[in-house]
Image (cartoon, rainbow, N blue to C red):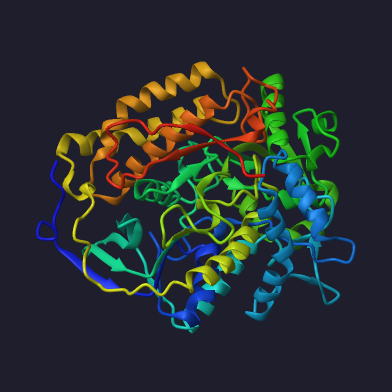
Length: 544
């Protein structure tokens, strides 16, 4: 099919120095750091608080006490990641963490304090108390509201309800971004495009992720020529409350960090025999233990906070306490029924330690990026930290780019804009999302086996032709992105025939030392990928 031309489409054009896609902590902190270097424009798919940062309860990990050190933080991160991460990137994360916390304090962020000192909590797989929190269990909400207000005060431009569709690449360089709003299609040229779009948690039937988190940044980057890696590693949070109606509600890791127990219907603490740290074991271990206990007892698993005290619980966990009360659960007296749910994409767009992708002038930061700091399983409360540490580094790097910017459209538009969907494709795409998320949950979820994943792959191949179209509604374009992301995650999970971190295969339950030196990548230099062929997974030597 011939490529679309500018004459075929009504496209509004503009220019900025830096465009950031995503308004979570990674995107907003990067924007604040870039503001003095030029005009910064932030696109948000919905409103400014539609991403995952808003829901982050636990806090930010940093070696911030005399008893702690970056070395100890490094060891906990390396161990939780199943010894699979990028050691140099982890060093950057833990060593620069205190400086970024001080940046937040300078910006007016008010961390909880005890007797004047910043209060530090403990979470699973941490050997020390090093979790800084805000508003008890409202860290993400308080943090993002504060950062957004700072960003507005210093003149950062925000465009809400903007669905990013395609990255413009010419001569191997990112030149700008196409996005759509209710007013039509737009092109914004920039010195640098920075993806901070989050992960792809909406691939799963049960997820802690916001509705907007559908893998758009992953697929845009892939089509532009960037490399995706480690997509088989998807973390499931162990303790999620599924209310009778509405969305799953995360019960923070910090609850167990403060001493809550996991018990079965008989009140027995089953984690004591599962890991040396019991309830504070790594998330993958705790998640699988909960599922095993559910299957063994054919009953619920619960969090028990009652021994923490009726005065302490509402003060330390006001959000969790009030949300549970909405469902007539008084957690000072009642147990909380919990189950694992999809939580965090470990892999993502391959970047170096300054956020560069394989495409010049295209950066990625936060959950959408694969920096290597999380290895095969993320340590609790390292996610907000990653956005801060690498957001700062991305800003420093992007500010060095002095390429000229003009608002002119690229001479050749992506073929994507020529492949408009017909009515039949629209109907088929609109009908499949619930089936997709159900199948991903059951066939490429917490516990995986080849037979089920092959069934998932066969169904995805039937749906694959639907990914070649540009649809009339953003939610259908989201679904097309989800299909491609699901295909790559399934392919990677099939190829990694071992269990490592949060990737667990019941047919290959042991780790394979040979595969521990390999990463699985997806790469294409063709910016006109249209979904005619399944993405191909390849092994690549791992950076250590």
